[in-house]
Length: 411
Ligand SMILES: Cc1cc2nc3c(=O)[nH]c(=O)nc-3n(C[C@H](O)[C@H](O)[C@H](O)COP(=O)(O)OP(=O)(O)OC[C@H]3O[C@@H](n4cnc5c(N)ncnc54)[C@H](O)[C@@H]3O)c2cc1C
Image (cartoon, rainbow, N blue to C red; front, side, top):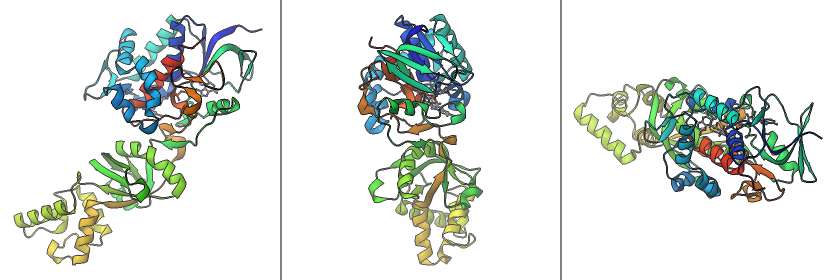
C-alpha cells in the first residue's frame, strides 16, 4: 500500500497553503496537492498583483462586514487574526504596511514576495507538494481517505478541502470541491458569482467612461431589498458599471438578479445631496451667474459627460437656462440628479468574478475546528465554504485564518 499521510491538503491557494503550514507545525506528515503547475496562482493575482492581505479592523468589526454568516469565523479569527497574520508574514520575511490606515499590503507592494516566502516556509517544514495533479475522486474506507488522480492514488488519515469556489476559473478554482463535499453528504448552497462588473440596460453612460464618480451612493429599488445601500467609487463602462462599489454591490445583486432577471438601482452621484440641496445649489448658482445655462450649472456638481447624460435622460437641451425649462422637466431633472435610475441586466458570470457567493453549508461544519460534522477527518477552509466578504483583504484573511485552524487537525 502507498505511504499514508497524516493529512492531504487539496488545493494550493492561500487557505490550503496555511493549512499545510499549520499541520506541518503540529508535526504532521503533509501532502499538498494542486492541479495547476504552480501553487497560489490566484493569490499572485490578488489586489492587482499587490496582494491586499488583510485590513486593520478589529475582529468584531471584521466579522460584521460578512453579514449573517460572519460569526461563524469567530474561532478561526481568534486563533489567527489580522495581527497574527502580519506577525506570521513578518516571521517569514514579509514586512506589511497599511499606508491608508486600512488595507494591509506587503511593504514592497508585490505578491511575488508573498509567494516566494510561503514556498520557502513550506519547504522548511517539509511539506510535500505535488503540482499538476488533478484529483478526480475522493473516498473513505476504514478510516483512510483515498484521493485518486488519473495515474495515482494518494492515501491519508485526514483530508482538508481547500479547492476554492468558482470565480476566475483560469486561476484554478472550478468548483471541484463542491462535488467532493456533496459525495460525502454535505449540502452546498446555491452559488453566485460575486465581485465583478455589472451590465446595465442604460448604455448612454458609456460616454462617461473616463470619469470616476467618487462616493456614489447605490441602493436597490425593490421594496423588499430597500436596506441594500452602499457608498463608494464608481466607473462607467461600455456595458454598464464597474469600480470598487460595484464589486462590493455585485455580491448582493447577483442572487437577486437570479430571482428577478433585472434589478432596478438608484444612484446618487452627488455625495448624498437630496432634492432640496440640489434646488438650493441651482438657485445659488443662478444668483452668482444669471446667464448660466443648465449644463454649466450642472458642471458645478458633476463631470460634464455625466451632466450631459442626465440632461439627455430628462430630455432637456443643455443650452437652456433653468428658468426656460418646463416645470415638469425641471422636477424630473432634480429627481434624477438625486437618484438616477439604472437597471442591472446581467454580468459576465464566473469568468471575471473575484469570489463566489455560497458554498459548502456552514451548518455541517464545526466552526471550532473546520471539521465536517458528517465525516471524521474531513476539513474545509477558504472560499469553498459559504462565506464571502467585501473588497479590502477580507477574503484572504478568511482563507488564511480558516486554513490555519483546519490545519490544527483534531487527531
Ligand atoms: C483577480 C482577483 C483579485 C483578488 N484580490 C483580492 C485581494 O486583494 N484581497 C482579498 O482579500 N481577496 C482577493 N481576492 C479573493 C481571493 O483571492 C480568494 O478569496 C482566495 O484566493 C480564496 O482562497 P482559497 O485558497 O480558498 O481558494 P483559491 O485561491 O481559489 O485556491 C484553490 C486552489 O485549489 C486548486 N484546486 C481546485 N480543484 C482542485 C483539484 N480537484 N485538485 C487539485 N487542486 C485543485 C486550484 O487550482 C487553486 O489553486 C481576489 C480574487 C481575484 C480572482
